[in-house]
Amino acid sequence: MREISKINHLEGKKIYFASDQHLGAPTMASSLPREKKFVAWLDQVKSDAGTIFLLGDLFDFWFEYKTVVPKGFVRVLGKLAELRDAGIDIIFFVGNHDLWMEGYFEQELQIPVYHEPLRFNIAGKNFLIGHGDGLGPGDKGYKRMKKVFRAPASKWLYRWLHPDIGVRIAQYMSVKNKLISGDADVRFLGEDNEWLVQYARRKLEKEHFDYFIFGHRHLPMDIKVGENSRYVNLGDWIGYFTYGVYDENGFRLLEYPANTAANLANRG
Image (cartoon, rainbow, N blue to C red; front, side, top):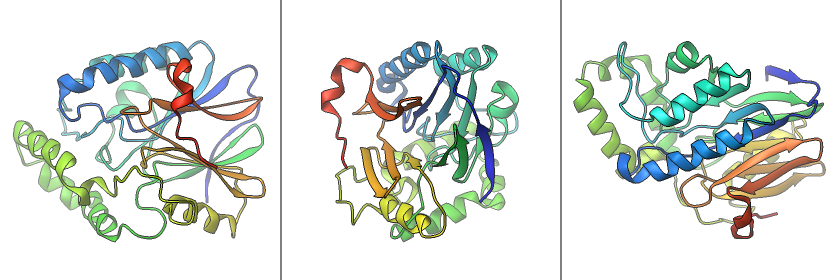
């Protein structure tokens, strides 16, 4: 597996991780308070952030036409631009709801976008980072649909729809269709049944990772999967408002704001 980046020295900076904001769901108006809360978190961490990893489903739907992107999200996009202009690295992994990203983030925000999990070496520790959809056993219906959605022909055909029609259809389907959303069951299934735990353990049979960091499950989890390996699911910004932070003291899963940390469904 290709190593994308090596961050040798934290030098007083922290690495932040967040996932599954689903801005725009179920409506733009109802998600606005969550968007403002996420922007407030970004504003808070900018003082000591070296790198921010966003692990997908920032939007509940995103599709880029050649000259059009979905309306809205000006607050979060403006804040991301501000952080990049301040020299903070931001790395984005697409989720199953915003997998139709093309070049907008790279061109407008100078934020690299990745479509598969990748290895990062951070201060000598090996991280495997990604959204998490379609990994491990099960969820075969979604895995088949994902291949269809990612096909160039599918994107080409969809662009022939007028944006007002295409966006409206996709917003409806992203909320209603489990084949598009993937298995969104946020109940803890037990370590033996959590498919990303199984995926992590199988990866460890071939190579060592200190941390597996994923989103998608919408449930904060921190589970030991090997003698010196942990699987962390970041939760979401719908019900938990959780994020990860890595610094000289190791990795922690926290809740924003900090005084509600007792509500974490932290397991392991």
